[in-house]
Amino acid sequence: MKKALLFLMLIIGGAFSGAHAQIGLGIKGGLNISDCAGEGCEDLSKSLARLSFHVGIVGSTIINRRLSFQAELLYSTQGVRLESFFLDGLLIDEAIFRNDYITIPLAIKFYPISGLYLCAGTQLGYLIQSELEIKSQGTSISEDVRDDFSNLDIGLIGGLGYDFRNGFALEARYVAGITSIFGSDGSVGRNTNIQISIGYRIIKNRN
Image 1 (cartoon, one colour):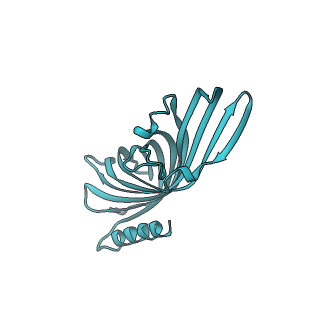
Image 2 (spheres, rainbow, N blue to C red):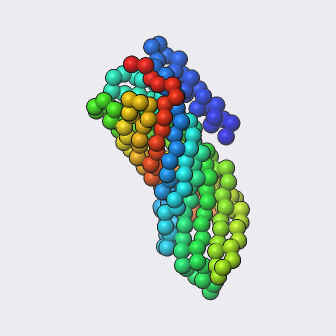
Image 3 (cartoon, one colour):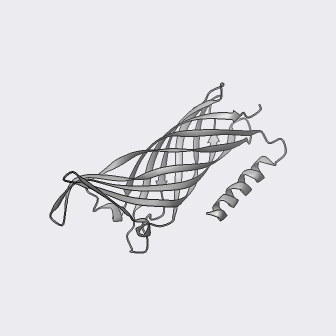
């Protein structure tokens, strides 16, 4: 994780130190709608998206009138939820996998018109904790299942948003995992996540 944070600092530092760089810094947060896709998730036939959240900091620099580069450092709570299924003959009312990541999204933003932008890029995630909670017949048990999941998660980003003149921003983004979230058991499953965010630029880009 230290290497990932160092990489983020180098990326931001290199982008921001260029001649005539226009720096913006801010915060963001919002809703996660996360799920699991791929062969390793086929057994999760009753899976439902887990509603959770993300929050963090944002750095950006203007490349030209139409393009900018954005790097983020987020705490992102993800996972999957299952309802009403049988496990070894026992009816499970609900099971929730809670996978919490530190993520580093890196994206290029394209502005076809002032304020409105499209974004695309990549994301590196590091799993910091994973928990399975099972609820059945009025009882609830929790178990640490981090060893069942891979520490690293890499995904692709695509979305659109709007930067308001007052410093606020709204964005809808889809993150599609391209690496397996499971450990070394041979299963292949990928994170999927829809993020709806609101942000505020504390230090605005200077035009």
